[in-house]
Length: 137
Image 1 (cartoon, helix red, strand yellow):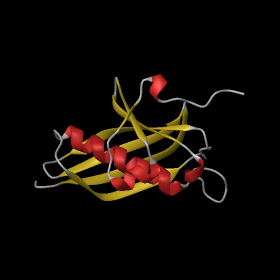
Image 2 (cartoon, helix red, strand yellow):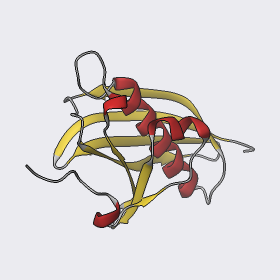
Image 3 (cartoon, helix red, strand yellow):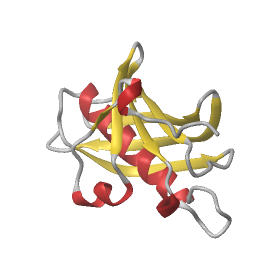
C-alpha cells in the first residue's frame, strides 16, 4: 500500500483563505515556472453520491485559483467573478491531489479573460474559462 500524498513534503505551502474556502481546504500553493499552482488533497468530505470529487468542489477550486491568478496579474488588485464556464472531463478520486494551473488569456483596463485547468498528475480533469471584473477600475 502506498502512503498518501503529502503536499508539505513535496514543497507545497498552505494558503490563507476565506472562511468559505477553509471549508474545503486546506488549499495548497507552489510556484512553478508558469506561475502559481494551487492544490487540494481530495478527502472523504469532497465526495459526491458517486464516490468521486463533487463538481462543486472542483468549480470552487477553479474559481478561487483563477481569481487569485487574475489578481496577481493586476498587482494584487481585487477582482470579482463575472462568469465561469467549467467542463468536467474526468473523475477525481479520494486521495488524489488536484492541481489548478491558470493563466490570463486577455486583459483590458476593467476586465480579465482567464483560463484554468485542473489536473491529477498528467490527467486533465476539468477546464474552465471565465471573466473577472477588476474592482475599482
